[in-house]
Length: 268
Length: 246
Image 1: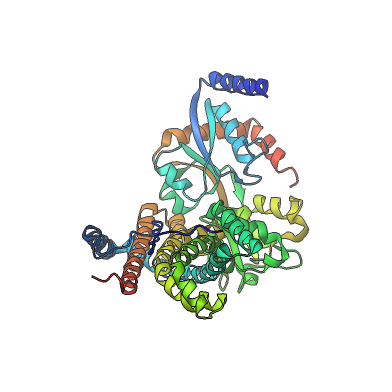
Image 2 (image 1 turned 90 degrees about the vertical axis):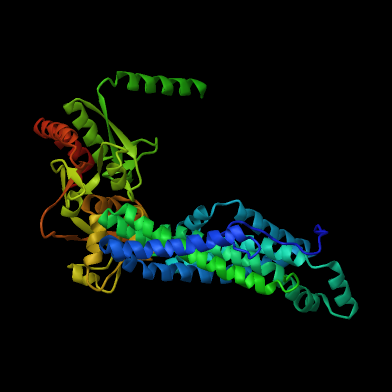
């Protein structure tokens, strides 16, 4: 039914997020150090030297950063739930469930996120069910549904990567299929799944800038509002870019730390 | 099909061929009916585009309109991507600091669109409500000034009206011509929405054509054309065509 991947340990690399620094990769490690402190340095320098626009811009942004985080965290939670369901669905022996899960992945992956956001917010906005959805919730639903499809593939690959022998052993010990999955396979698969999930998290944080089109006042929207009133386009977008950079780099570091911790079999 | 294509191409060449006069490019955010919009044939039409075409004819230049997103339209002017902006730009002191304006060609008031049945007699009535407008417009600046109201900015005024229609915000503030077009004349929106209140500005608000700071040549050329069509009645004819219901 589903193709089994012959390799024992599969490393899922989705280079959609930021380049995640690894200790082995010294060059990248240095690049991370450079950019992270470089960005912070530039922000501090600009605010100190030219506080008039830059400090004013920085003070204008915090509630936008908060909204960006809200959207990102809520969307990632939703996408994890959808991803797990989809991943299991894609591996299911039930033809119908398999078909539904696969179709969901195909449909979502074929539509650009920006179009999905417009669709869920404005096109479905006319339908009673979605009408009362506040912008933030609509944004979270759209982002969650989109990333759920990608996450489903991560889950599927992660579960697929666990040796068939594990299932066979568990089944012969008398575990039923559900027990095998929840008690034997998933705890092991989690280790393979988490790093790409961290990566998706970073990618989602960046993509969350798209929700500014739904009049959600996220970081980018706040920057645009500032620019449109003051005409300080260069200054406002420089600040927005730097703030995004600092946040993403910080998160990529956190993900890399987590990855190291999970890598107990390959520790050097 | 092919024949039609050839005909279109030919007319296109004829049009560009006859344009020996100097081209002036006007940036237009064509999402602001009836001031400027895109018709079913994808042409930029409306009061503004027709006006600049007439000004061009009177002043001896060829007016070319370029559809540009509102958010960033001023940055494009400063960067020299076009010669002028004719996109219902209100003349404000803040804007005058970064660009020059021609003589006013229209006077506007800000109109408040709300759902039918809601009464608004002053801006204070909007306290505690979510008030929306297009980003970077004078309408949005009004939204931000209303005490106790939550201001919300959209990329296009149409999206704000759609959200009002769907009940996701309580009021939309826009130029009166645009507001009345949505709230009173639009087939679907007019069933549920209404133009409840016209804000009396502290000082009159005018629309002008923006040119790059210091570009007096273009500004004077447009001014001369504008003066001419105001005198020969062409301006009134265009005005009547687009705002005959007033």
